[in-house]
Image (tube, rainbow, N blue to C red; front, side):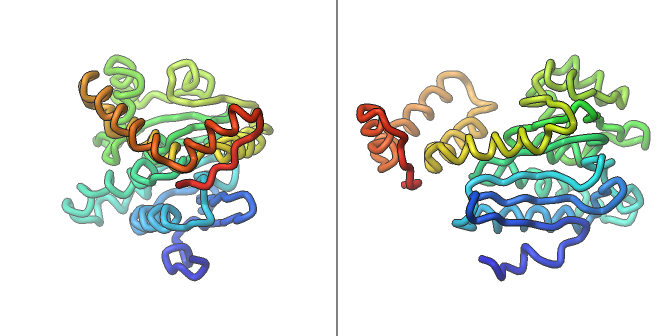
Length: 263
């Protein structure tokens, strides 16, 4: 996996893998605002697909260099791209959600447009108090095009989503936490430490149980309660046969930490 071409020569970002910590970092690095280009969007999709297949990686962190996560997309690129190409942008930016492994977004400073949208596609959003979330497309005579308004409405409801989208409103980190957009809000100096702690916490759980929980929750987001309960039951039954569940039960009774192997 080290030589996977999907992880090298990337446009405006890089990937770092720490096998000892079972962690991969996808790091936006186009100073000063980490603008996300059109080609970069498809590269991000391929990177998440590669990391999903990499046995060294348990948890993926999406973060950025500098004081801003991303001011958004490369604006002129939208006029240069074909309508067909633009219509597929949400698929690329949804890569963190499709990835079976837990994905953490670490957001500070401007997290606008596609920067916000790809963070919404992650499982956890750890924000610093400097974070400002926004979908400013109305100022360009456009609407969010990479899943932003749709994902946001699922999280905060139609009233708050209209307030954010139709007014291009900026949401500070603390407010994002209060509204349920952010998982945790910390002082800016503590952002990396909070992300590190969450990575280590997630690594302690069973990989197969985590993958199952993520897929179940994603798949049942739009389902009826009855269907969600039915699918939960099937997933529970399948995990009942896993090595990790047996290990978890035995460790519980033996009053020791479980050693999960992901099967």
